[in-house]
Amino acid sequence: MKRMFEAVIFGGSKLFWDYRHINTTHYKGYYHWHQCCEVLYVHDGTGHVIVNGKSYPIRRGMLFFFRPYQLHHVYANVSSKDPYIRTIFHVDPQLVNEMLQSLPKRRALFTSLCNGNHSIQSFDLLSYESVVERDLEDYQYSRQEGKGEDTEEIAMLILRLLDILFRDTNSEMRGPVVAGEGKSNGYAQKIMSWIDEHYQESFRLDDLAEVMHLSKFYLSKLFHEQTGSTLKEYITAKRMRQACRLLETSTKSVEWIGSEVGISNPSYFVQVFKQEVGTTPLKYRTRFIQSDYVREDEKVVEKASSSWEAKVTKYHK
Picture 1 (spheres, rainbow, N blue to C red):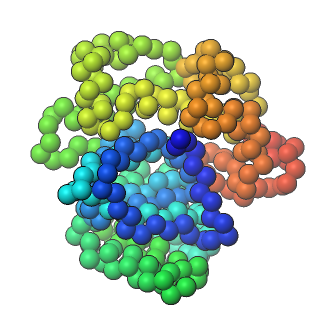
Picture 2: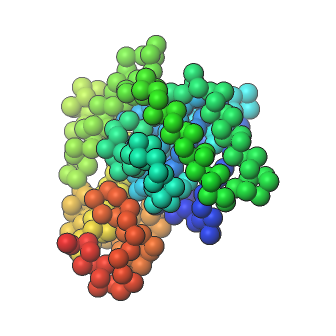
Picture 3: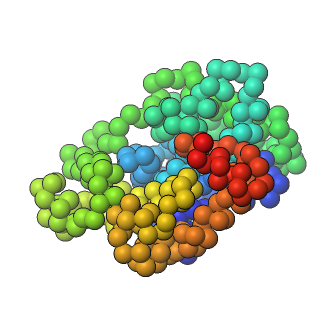
């Protein structure tokens, strides 16, 4: 079963690389996050990416940047005639910052993307398609030659992509709606905005349907059509991500955290958390404190100490 938190296991590697991965069968996707940065480039395909409470179109030439620990969902419309082809790589943001020390402007762009100061995370690079394809192919060739872990090769790959984003300010996809699609597409954005504001409360689907002036059945149908996920999946993902954040950054009780994310029944909260995250809330907190990185105000920073007490102190400075 896929879990919401997917720790990328680098195994001593500097970059986790998946070049031109092809899907020709059903690709539903699921809500998840990683402890590192993720870059997704679409060679071909259609569908939706949900990130930061917005829905963006999947199409050829799109590049998506996901921040560490950022909830996102990728859904593709796939068939044998219309495959979903993409390149994905994951990388430790600290490593990239070290690589770009002598390039302050490109480093500032990467830092902005990584810590959330850059609000746009979806870029239409179709006009640069040949350049991006060449850059990805060049790095793939380096890996085939056994040079994929060479710091300079990784730095060149990232620098080339950053340079395109840096120079092309018109590449940004600022909205969730694709031109030419139905007016009803705006509903998904409104629904996610409402859920983002109210997921910490205990509410019924009828409450949301009343606000949207739609029946709850049509509301659910629209949301699924426009995002590739169900309302329940989105609400659960928002609640579990916030629960993880509270477990990571506070010493509040599991009961309090469950209530804080809209699930007042402690046993049900533990049940849902374990099902979606893969472990109990208390074990997640312990495992997180013992991991290689800790979160602090949406950023990933190195451990300050190997002792449990020092890490807890760091959370509450």
